[in-house]
Length: 199
Image (cartoon, rainbow, N blue to C red; front, side, top):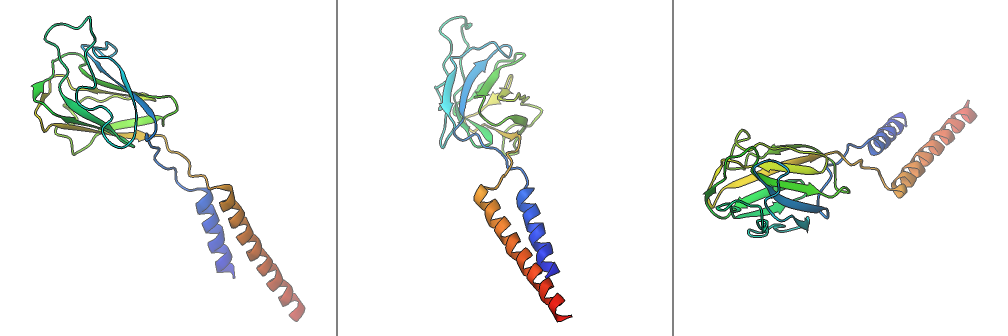
């Protein structure tokens, strides 16, 4: 009986103290912009999409601003898929990104999206972490591609870490757990009472 009680207590502790889950961006709003020659200097029109299945920003979605952009500047063709915890860039044309302090993409997630705690370049990327400087803020991921030489098969895959979401059980789970503990307690109390009567 002690073993059953111990197992029940351990199960309850596991349910109550379950590890946090990775939050997801599915359903969040994300805005993409191309910045150059510095971060914060937008060269494209901002485009907002809802993160879901499929490519959120197909090649050609991000367009240059109508004024203030030097001649000869263009946006390299890329399909951008924002996933549950990734940003996946698949290039569709070959070109070399202009060298600058910052020449790349900025992804701003809405304030109700998960808080970003870190980013890293996935091993499936064509480039190395040293070639693609990444940054992050609570709801922002800038990806600097300045000076990179792209082919039509180049890929940049960014993994995003977020603050965990507590896996709090539903109220009915607590009710079921407490009912089970009550039944165990009653059984132990009854067994202890029977022992007392036998003496």
